[in-house]
Length: 147
Image (cartoon, rainbow, N blue to C red; front, side, top):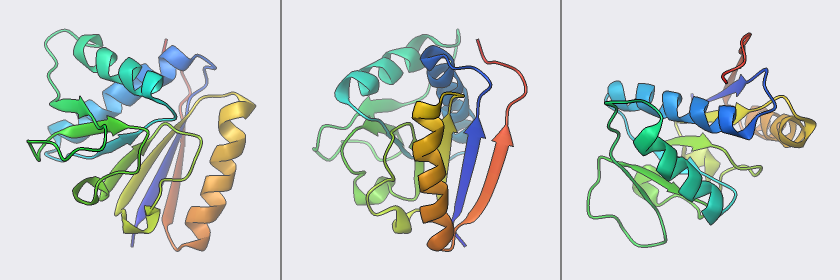
């Protein structure tokens, strides 16, 4: 059964949301998995790309921005605002306000929401869509702000 996990931060900070995304990406990478980080825009993609290089000293997560061309390497995280290429649809980390295109192909979707209504309301709509599609749903309210 496919899974959708929602992480709801106490903070309203966009920076805290992106830093949490980096920590989650690192955790997924350290477990031997790779996936696609879906963003709202090329600007947001660039922010997460830059932050993955600097968020933790000594951390290395193979990644690149996805601009529509098949990447040379397979075992990397792709970051982009375009729909994920097929080989990267299994695990999606969603930072966008939209449900991932072809979300039914995913085995696991990780949603990261901050505590603003601008982020939480579209997240509620995605929760409903995932539930209707038969996903197992989990929600984690993170007690401490990730600042």
